[in-house]
Length: 480
Image (cartoon, rainbow, N blue to C red; front, side, top):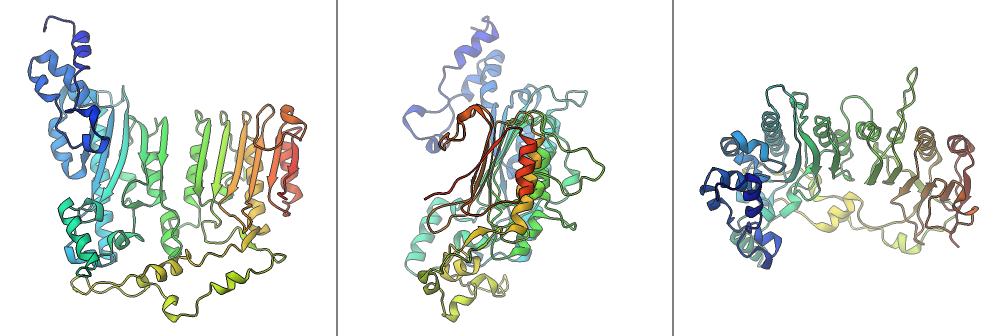
């Protein structure tokens, strides 16, 4: 068989099942089974190439395994890699710390470990693209698929986790589980030292990971990959209890909304046709940077679809919506207010005990929900605040003027009033179908639909839209 062309051997090898009985079991179970492919790589040099083309195409490994990976991935194997799935392993912690909230020292150690894991990964990827001239001739998709400590709930040994859960149910063990680190956000340090990677064509950092990464750090990692064709980043940006945590996660020393600014820059990529952000905390900078003095206006040459669902607060914690004075106060709303002094403080507000103390930190879900604003639910912020909403809408209109190929654009809030109505501004270009009645002269003209109740934007915003999209028909839609 060695006399056969390499292409034919590779085709024959493609019919070999990677795992035992893989068609009969679930995906997660399949990952735990030994592969059937490696023994075939020992048949001959030709079979080695055919098999390793498959076995090295997608590599999933932990940050602690990277030294071994660099020893194995050498020579021709480097050219076979198309996908890397990377797990960042944070420092372990003692069993009795499962009942304690993370301290500042814990968070600093995790930041250091996270930073090191990312730096060595980028250095490994840089070595893959070195073909003598410093330029990449192929591409790799990078997935940061998980970030965890071995003692985090779903990463403990299965037998220990079952035992711990049983002991908690019996009242013989106290465990905070994921609440131990739910207010901790990982930060990438020394990001300027990361090498630029021209080999990475796709970057994915999802919310499937157990730990949160600060939004700015995620954007900075992606920014080190100038040849990206696709970016999928899910970050946690909903810290309600500690505004300083959210502020530090989004900003540096300068009072600038760095996340919105970075997304604005990304949205202007010359090859980008669709931008969909949902849900996200934004400022007008997402559409239009505040200081454009003496600078050419931004331009979106190929963007066709721009859709944003925004949070009810801006990056500084100010509310885009206020109470409608014409709406009566719901009696149930007042009844939800608690006079219980125990409800006035959160468990995580108290000073944590020393790391060496065996006494567990306390955690009560109701008090924590009150401290974070998750309880009680009061749907009273239903009226847009002119001071914040008008600048946001005006910046949106300015951006639309610089999008020559724009077909659809929307700005939708997560706000819902007690009747279920929300806040939405939608643009449809001529010929684009919409989910509303086509009573505004059908689809033969561009339409700008406002689903904003009885509230109205400033005339300056409407005038800018008419300048931006000539002939646009404006409709204010009110639900009966």
